[in-house]
Image 1 (cartoon, rainbow, N blue to C red):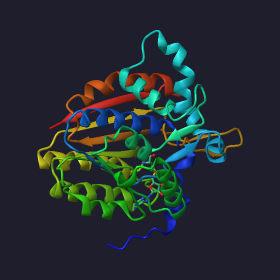
Image 2: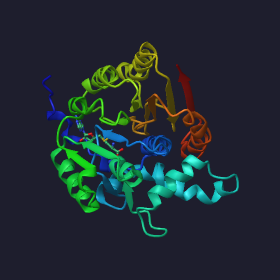
Image 3: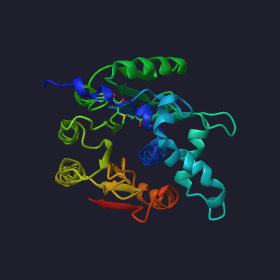
Length: 306
Ligand code: SAM
């Protein structure tokens, strides 16, 4: 397949690091890994859209967007008020993991998915990360090199949708695939579904975690719907976790200029989820919606099947 990568180079995850979508995605990712790593057998983790790996929350990108202020940093600010009711274990785990990348009470660094994953891996586990943006791939390689993880982590500067294929099925027959595109190119929506369909034919027992935006676009609505159909047809269980922080409606300012709401909601669709995942996420998602909610539309949903 020929891939037109020309227009995606404007997406930089550094603007979005630590936002509400990252809170959802990384809490779910962590909860999945905790479960999968309880088994002795080696695990291969494949991160098809890795980003730069580490982000500065006090840097120019994050400061410009202020998105972490409505995500991870807002959770931190709310900690005192939720202590009384108790933090949900999966959310506590996530906050502590992110905090472990920082010195005490400083929240300057936010770890992306490759670093969250690598932090948990055992010597026998492997991580393959794909990143196609030249600058982010270079930063990612440099950040990963600092870990001195040797052959445990491989950075592949190539298309993650295509690159995934050569690693499935994994030698040890245990794998987690995180698929987290930027969806900047409209074809990403269809490619996600095609990639998961292909991956299930190669390795039906793998755990697949797919992040998707919930926005008023038909192709975005299609992602969870089509993934459900794929999982059902393959006879595999699935879990769909979503977090809404605000209305998706356009508003206007005093001058009549249209104000776009930014990302109002997102979801994580998991095929072959750990059987403990739904129960672990329920209280964590409820707290996320409560703390990160920006208007009366704030909500979460957890739906499962198979
Ligand atoms: N997974 C990361 C995390 O959780 O920290 C964030 C990834 S970000 C949402 C998506 C990344 O995918 C961007 O850095 C973008 O450059 C990269 N990308 C876009 N298309 C790609 C492709 N076809 N293959 C690999 N990487 C791609």
